[in-house]
Image (cartoon, rainbow, N blue to C red):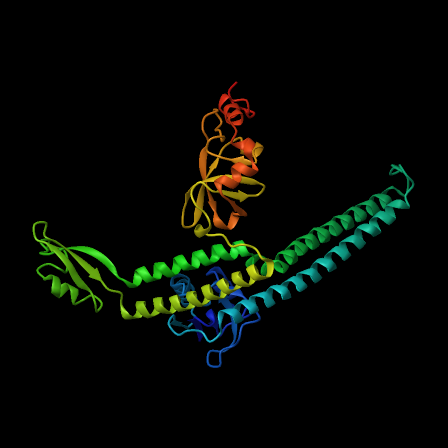
Length: 405
């Protein structure tokens, strides 16, 4: 018996089969990955295959059904069990620590692979170079001499050995790149800019789930006049009886023979969604605490819409940009093709490719590096606001390559 089980704690795991029983290719083709680090199930047996990115997430029903159908098609007995409601016992902080431990283990393992391959390849190439150094400089193959065939075979062996050595070196370089990527997993995930964008994405996902729980509004015919539907001759109330509890009529338009109906979410779907909201809220709390910790350690400012006003200037890189509008997720700032030559970019001095006024761009808050009021900008950079500077820009004295003459 092969069991495909999904829980919020373990994700989607296949029990009762290994890579050696003939079902491995079928499961792999369905999108599952092998792992020797999965915990076996006390009732279902050994675990070897899993579906990636499914822990603390709803089951990927399509992939599970596809795998089960493929296994049954080859004569295997398959049982599918899905639990998207029961909350996991492992906290998100523990899960994140496990992720970093696995990344560290991969980095060490890949570094070992890289060292071995580079050492072996370097040794082989070194041996070939040493052998070639013993041949007199410019010595040709002596055609017609009794040593000709021997020297040709020796050179062929050296070339083949050198090729194998270079393959080992290339393999070692690939392992080294993978080791570097694994070693940078923690730093990449905990970067403050990356974390802020992740929090925004998670909060948007929570809002989407909350909207889903409110139900959906549909427009129905009050009196069904077609005879090809199951609703022919049934009242709105009779049709609503087939819908989840809580579904109701919002309004009726007798003139158009339509009604707006709220379709409530079923109990199972509601329980699954509420579990997801709980898990996402836990994850958001973890990352927000991490942002606060980073801010305290580095003293880095976390910018938001509350820190800016229209007309202020925001620093990005080494330049200051005039703020045209303050949005919830970003700032609308002045920009132009001549911005690379300006310390302060305003709507007045920015230009497009034709020499006209510049345009506006969006600047996310995680890219903001400082704030300056309009008065401070005029005091610190008076040349950017002088009449001569603006006239120079307007007259085209600061044309860029490709601008019209």
